[in-house]
Length: 207
Image (cartoon, rainbow, N blue to C red):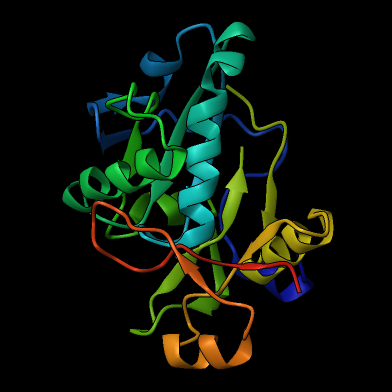
């Protein structure tokens, strides 16, 4: 995090007591400490529903949830959209996993369409904004705060590409129009069909 970002982003420091916030989620209203009980907790923060990296991240988290449960860790996600959007997006996440035996995501997703909780927790990156000029939530992995990992979306995409093996698939960023994607990647662009009908999970063979 740059000096400018550190000075601009309010929120928690390592060792701070994590706020016992109350929030609307896909499993109803909850208070964080009541939800966690005596478990460890990990909070995933995501900048928007219906984005390829967030969808695949939460899909993998859902698939790995039994391993977190074995380790007495509860997961909860936050995204800056409404509950209605979260319910619809959840179907896409499950479709990404191609597991018809699972009917719901095994952890709640917090609705934060006003970005109030993201501001309180210091998850806002002042240099990353959406088309309307509203700040996006930084991707942060977080009672005391003992670990906080924040990075730009471009950093994550580059890390994914770095660790991919030749022959694997990588994602096409949503900002690239379909006509341009076909021109840029003549080997072909595969679009996964999702329940929402949105065409944002697009793949190409690793270039």
